[in-house]
Length: 303
Image 1 (cartoon, rainbow, N blue to C red):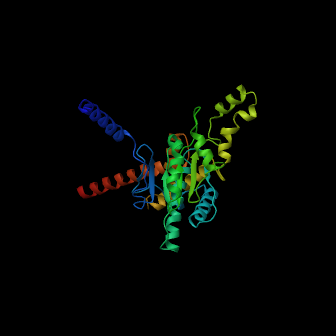
Image 2: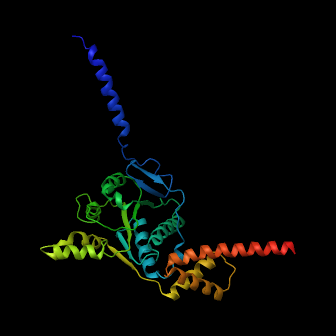
Image 3: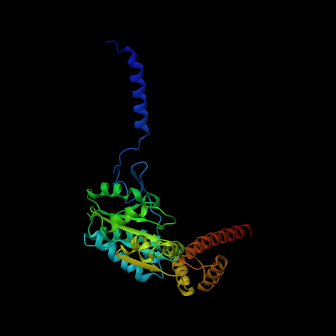
């Protein structure tokens, strides 16, 4: 039987197969996991992208959240030492140091444990985007068998519409057959206590046959975090403490009275007081003071 007429078809099918293989995402991998202490999860590429330098502030500079800071540091320390530890939800007022505390706790505990034990394997911080929560089981499958300890960090976690991404997280936190691996802990931040806007909760309660059950599934997600740390709006005294702490850390040449006056003016122009506003003020102030010093030096040279 002459099969010469099938050769063009075979070549065409092979080219199609090769093209589909190139288009398909690569299998997830942990290659390069020893190259850094922080990573960003890219599920489309099936890999963890290393972060050479994490943008964080020292835990000692986080003022006004002493209670929350102690609890999260203790929990992270327990996890680093192989002791039981809880997943944590940091919720509350914007700009009050929720994300900063997670990153600072990771850096602080790694540094602390390295001093106690030079052979300590640092905790690895992995950031996962809210829109990628559906890939959480895939990521945990990779991490489960790896001999390191991981903090999964989801910043600004909330649900704006009817979606099912929260189910992957909910299963991992509590109730799933596989559950959360012993070498993984989850820290999340949110401006909302129950991760849903109030009008969405009230709407479901109003239209449901049984209002108490209508929102039970989603609202209970926040209950599955073992630690709930609330962050509240900043009082003026605490705001000034934040500003003074940042100014001392940078050794800014300015009197306390002038620093307070400028900080108050900055907060008034922003219409709010928070740790983020204090940090932004210090960034601007340092630039201004440097510029004033340079101008003074030039004037002095001219004279």
